[in-house]
Length: 236
Image (tube, rainbow, N blue to C red; front, side, top):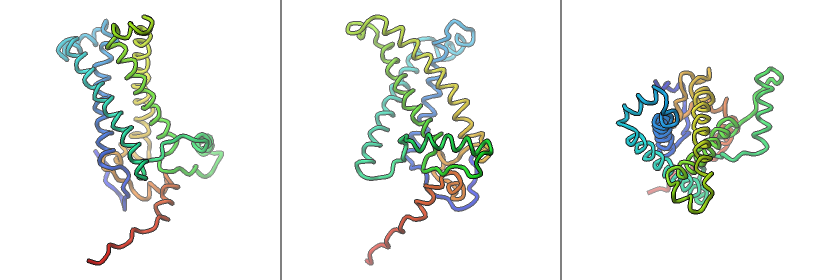
């Protein structure tokens, strides 16, 4: 259920960004659903899922198909960011800096009652930035190790044989880490925080309440308020 807006709203995400997010949800869940049974193939629940998917070969095919699609989406995302920066369009300031680490300490002080005012955030706060770069880092590791396991004979011609089992361990460990991070970190920030429970509708509707923007992203709110109004169209 998407919560209805309680007042004026502002554009937060474009249709392309929301489509990227939806596909990321879809691919992540399918990769987890088809990947974990392969990691724990010796368990009863894994055997039942593999049979449900049509056998191990079908499970691998589905897993690899969505892995390729996720890699293609990642390349699209990189291209979109580069194109937006070259064109001078706002794509979202996801760069980490000293201010973000300072805001971590200020936010801890606010949440523990040592500070009366919460820190002021821009378009994205430190939690969103950390999570974004965790996705970037995790996708890079999963794609690299997955390709190593997919083409072990070819890569063994150029690299030591230990590369393949190392990739298998890293791939499985990063998968578990990603799933736990989504359940604990992302679910809370996107669904269970008291301010947005039962879910944050912004990534689905593309819009955010102005009052919420002022409260959670004060610097972004100030930038929008101070931005000059668009000039009127020329007379026809």
